[in-house]
Image 1: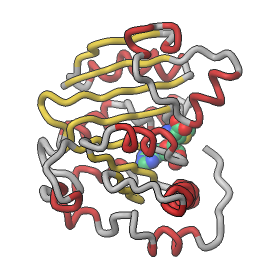
Image 2: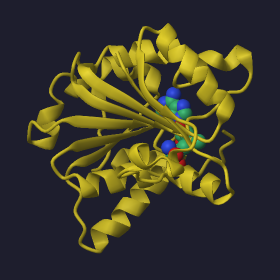
Image 3: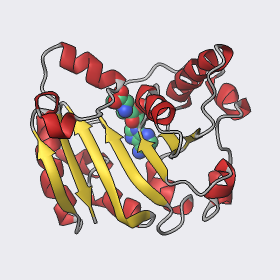
Image 4: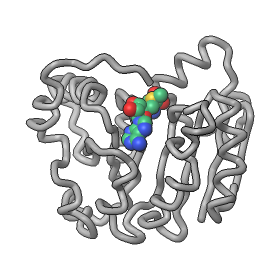
Length: 217
Ligand code: SAM
């Protein structure tokens, strides 16, 4: 994804109380960050955060962490959260993290995460870049280090090539595909309770079908 750097975004992220700084410090103790023992779900590559914010608002008994590697993008999510705070909306069950997903094995302990969401992950179309795809076996092995044995990974995309690749790559890493659809918005059972992401709104408005799969280890 091509990104325009926004001056000051690093400082903005560094000073936000909503961002967990030095996340590896909390490895194995994330419940203490939230002050309860509710399950913890993460979105990797959350972009501007619409999905995870809405999930957190609708499910106060579940804790959420939005993960984004670019501060320029994360800052936009933080600004949206600040607007909500000004309106008096509190989201105590949501935090953010500025980190590359490759490093998440240093951040979460075995069995610490209940669910992983990957939404509209960058497709990295060149074969030589396949290991950068968030559904590649390289990343699936990272997730295996901290997802609960009975946990799940949910992946949505409008990119058919990435979806087809993922249907092969995920089992290659030893995972199982539990469910899949090639047209989420017209699949009543898979679409139940679906929260749209920014990209999902944009691409489905253009008429693109949305692909989704659910996987477990
Ligand atoms: N999930 C959002 C949505 O559906 O609207 C944003 C999708 S955007 C195409 C993908 C996001 O994933 C980008 O913001 C990108 O910076 C982030 N991302 C890609 N690779 C990542 C990685 N290895 N670790 C953390 N974030 C990553």
